[in-house]
Image 1 (tube, rainbow, N blue to C red):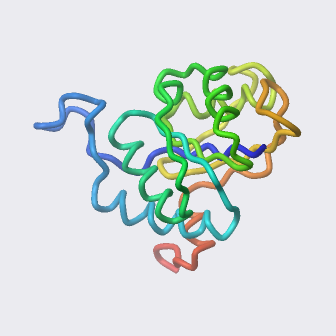
Image 2 (cartoon, rainbow, N blue to C red):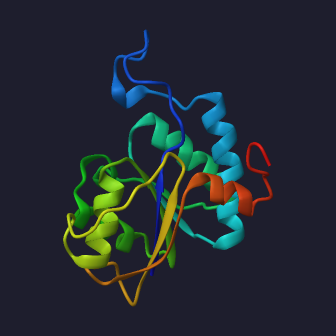
Image 3 (cartoon, one colour):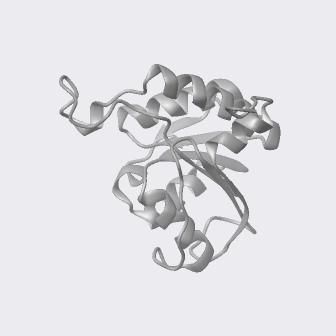
Length: 170
């Protein structure tokens, strides 16, 4: 199986009036537009047939963009993507039966999940997921701690460039 970890797109800043509840912060218009372009680039790099998302609004909205870009019908909420329960995330991914599963979540949990996939230890390495970044991990069989091989980690500007968007100032 392949697991593609994706950080949610740019959302409304924490603590702004009307957005005191972190779980209900939506994507900004800029975040939506950038994620749509990044999703187009991601779609050129891979296919997916299942999707997991954190229950937080910004992740669900990002997942919706990915679901539309990939035409994924199997979309499920995974509490593990909001809590950092990496073993439960792998269980949820395996339970989809998908060959390639998109998993939309948050930092620092995604960096920890990547480390857990590659080393078996959530603190076993350091990685950075900017908002809208993605990493593809391949497992030979089901997702298990330490059983993954990193195919790539791409920041959102690189994904947008794959889709043909010119970098600012170019």
